[in-house]
Image: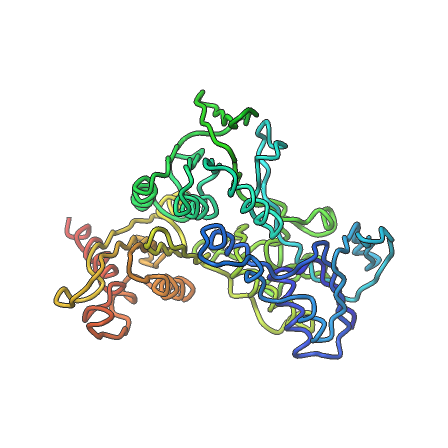
Length: 450
């Protein structure tokens, strides 16, 4: 069988490795238009904040890795056209400019995502940069060395992580967000406020409810907003989200919002010989059971692996995702999974939440840290829908535990008494996840009494 993989970051790399480890006789050809593969864009902030010294450390594979498995890897080759009816692709070698055709039995679309470019005047200014790829990260790093003041447009994960990185490297930082909170896809208002407080304590100027309309050139750039305000900076980094890079298959397979390709449980598109994985396609979002576009490296690796398994038959189903994420900010860990309360209500769920605030282990221990947990649940079914955790204590793995609860349709009653270890170094006799669930039960019991 001949397999062509178009695009090779997280999903493509995982697919190739899976195919050739289990089926080394397979003819696998990779076409990648960049000169690198497997770049961890989530590590850019670590590099910009000088926590890691080399951007090259953010690659976890290279072309020779895949060639060692037996793949034919063509770097700097841009796929110009895909004809799914004839099972042909048209490719250009970007170094020689030669154009040629290739054919496939199965095709894996793992072309990833592109940074969304908002309709803002002045985006073509050389001091206005985007942040996702290796080359963009290098340009940002080099530019920031020469400019003391930086404005970041967009306060999702990328924007907030960059704000922290530049605050830690003694830059003057302004974070501009169009919504009335930061990290709106991940946390509810209370935790947004707590993180904003941390940003402000580190001299980051946070501007909410400010949609940027234009960036004017000058000695300093002037960032104008639709609210009529203006902010000055030497450099602007735009982090306003991503969209699927799927134009090659437009009109040939079914697609969803953001241009994301619709897949079934086995990573197949509506064309049974075309598979999709990673940022190019949708995920099944388990808290609601709906298709969503959630571009995350964790989902990409899993989907790529499954595509590599399932091109040989419907072997292993995709389990879906809770979109579990985490970040470190000024010594705190923020971790979240599933739905926020806002998003649960927007999805028509009769949802509520409780907030637990307490020490993670017994107060007699010589050191301790407070933690805050938001637990979101369905009042009708009592199912756990989501959680947000914030502490100087490492709580990222607790978000993974809640992710499993959501995956398995567990209720607050299950979580309240699920078996968890007790050891004073780590927690109380009831783990804090037990305690927040018990708090939710008490809240519901009080409603019944009323």
